[in-house]
Figure 1 (cartoon, rainbow, N blue to C red):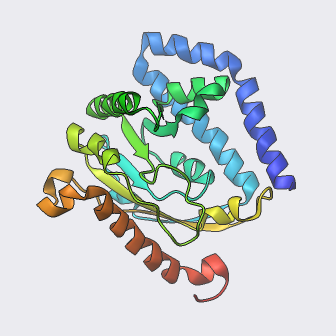
Figure 2 (tube, rainbow, N blue to C red):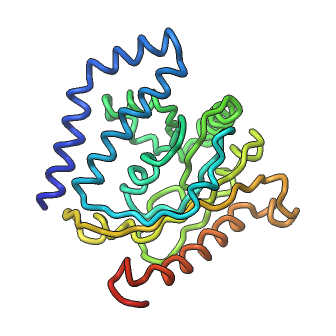
Figure 3 (cartoon, helix red, strand yellow):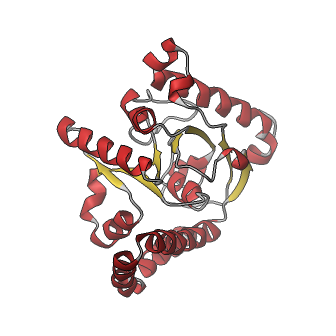
Length: 253
C-alpha cells in the first residue's frame, strides 16, 4: 500500500509542480514545435521512470533494436495494466502519441500533457468521431509522429487471454504507410491489477517485434489484419512466458 501512495503522490506532484512548465512548453511550441516534442517527451518520461522506480518494477526487454529510428511507426500491444503505458512510454525513442479513451479528457492537467505528447482521445461509441481520431492519427504518422495503440480497445481483465484486436486500429499504419511494431507485454497486471490497491515489486517482459508493413502481408492476412496481429502477439506471449518463467514466477511453468 505504501508503494501505491508514493506513486500517487509522485503523479500529483508532477502535475502540480509542472503547471508553469505547461506555459513554457506552449511558448516553446510556438517557436519550434520539434523542441516542444522533445522536451515534453523528456519530462514525462522522467516522471514515469520515477513511478516505475518507486513501484519496484524490473524489466526484461527484447528486440528494442527492431524499432526503426528513421521513421514513425505504429506500436500495437496487448493490454492488461495501467502500467503498460508507463512501461512502454519510457522506452519510445521519439515523439509518440497514445490513443486513449475519451474519459481521460476530463482530467485537465493530465489532458494538457497528453495533448503536448500527441495523444488522441477515442470515442468508441461515436463512429463519426472515431473516424476523425483515426484520420488525425494517420496524419500524425505521415508527419513523423509514432502512434501507440492497444487494439483490444480496453484493458483485458482475464489472465493469459486476448480480446479481439480491432481491424480499424491498423488503418493508421495502412493509410500512412508506416510499419507496425508488435509489442508483447507479459506479467504487467501483477504490478497492480492482480491485487488492488497494492503495488508489488514485479518482473515483466517487453518484446518488440520486427517492423511489419501492412502492404507486405498476404491478401488473406490483410483482410483479417486484427486477427493476424492478435495471433502473432499471442504466440509471442506464451513463448516469452515459458522462456522467462523462472524470473517471472520463481519456478518453471
